[in-house]
Image 1 (cartoon, rainbow, N blue to C red):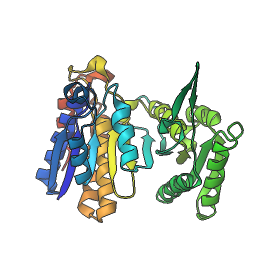
Image 2 (cartoon, rainbow, N blue to C red; image 1 turned 60 degrees about the vertical axis):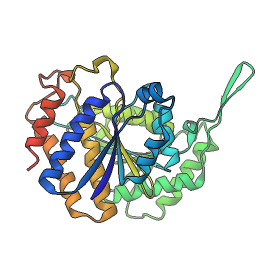
Image 3 (cartoon, rainbow, N blue to C red; image 1 turned 90 degrees about the horizontal axis):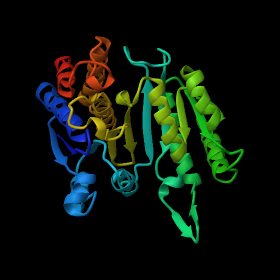
Image 4 (tube, one colour; image 1 turned 90 degrees about the vertical axis):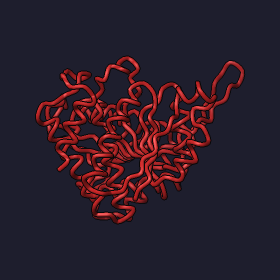
Length: 336
């Protein structure tokens, strides 16, 4: 049995959470994984109701679960996801980007992963006012840099065997210099993996020009956030972009996109990103628990999403005619 906490979020969050919940219930019925799912409220609505975007009782449920799924939240995102990343030491943010059929990808053969250090950099939130000047402290440590580099090399060893370290060490010589040196040192431990380095502006350009040349990109927190959104658009949009936040003992999975308040309540949102985040959750559970049934569910769930989009089925937000739940039922019908 797996205890799964589900943060339903804001905007389109409750709608795509309903979609994922239906998928998880179908998986329970067909594969007998024994999922116990607890829906939780965190974000703007929770802040309005309780005065806290992430109430302590929600944190308690999450920490007692085996994994967490989180829908997008609104303006209080930093108080929810950034806080959880630090609290649970979810040091690796994993964002795959791959071409899907019938989606407006730049090329058909894109398949890359961005491995983003998730605990340091400017996102640590150490900002100060000094008179009329605002100052932000950027922290990069050797230990965190080597830890994320090792994760990237391990990921590459199960993929195409190439790691690209992305930084701006020619300008930020201390912080990015340390990150680059740390990644290069770890590369010496993985002789069978190809390793190169690239400045972040060049990487941004090459993600447009030749995205098929990348396999695993490892980078710092801020750069990884920006590049992963770019990579998602390169393969057709944020609606197909899942993400994982992984630590030593826990993991949280979420769609890359935001709460999309402009289409909230219209039942038009593409739930694929959240469904594929659940697929990443099953992959993680399979590896952590050595559970072949969870691995099978992950494969079948990805295949079901692939078959639906390959058939030309699309939700209304991306030019199709299906509602969120109609699209979801198409996915569920292929979970055989």
